[in-house]
Image 1 (cartoon, helix red, strand yellow):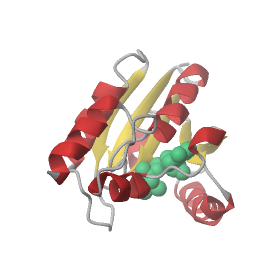
Image 2 (image 1 turned 60 degrees about the vertical axis):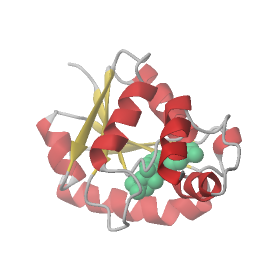
Image 3 (image 1 turned 180 degrees about the horizontal axis):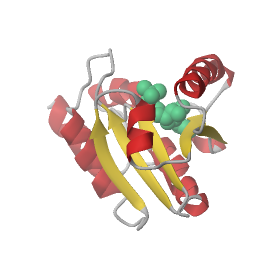
Image 4 (image 1 turned 30 degrees about the vertical axis):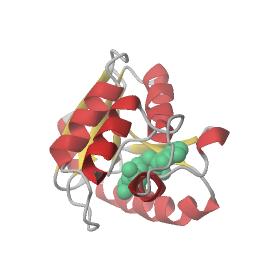
Length: 159
Ligand code: ADP
């Protein structure tokens, strides 16, 4: 049986921190579905389709990654693709409480689905989509922190 993982998130936009988790996850699972969750309460900078396209381009060299958009529950999407796990990244203790809450709720909603956490790569432990947007707005250099296509997309959003 193929081991499929779903990697859900806002990805507004995808950063090298996300990419690192996706890449490492793709070595453990047969297939990783990166799913842009379209029900975020925060108002995103990029539309769900723009975020999906940026992820498709940034992951084009990883053969066992698919990218999709979903509005609704993560567990619903996971059932649809027969995923056995939710893949999430952990940056700091501050992520822990939130992740524990959603993991526990997902377990209540779907007992057969495990959540697997990967510790961030040290070089990305401070990196988030929000900080990337803040720095990009004022023209800061983000070369080593985001894929080149995301850099271009951010420049065109902010000029
Ligand atoms: P969400 O709104 O669901 O938190 P995000 O796009 O912010 O969506 O994050 C998706 C997942 O990627 C989360 O598990 C988050 O902890 C993880 N993540 C975000 N940035 C990093 C990073 N720099 N290193 C490792 N994991 C990260």
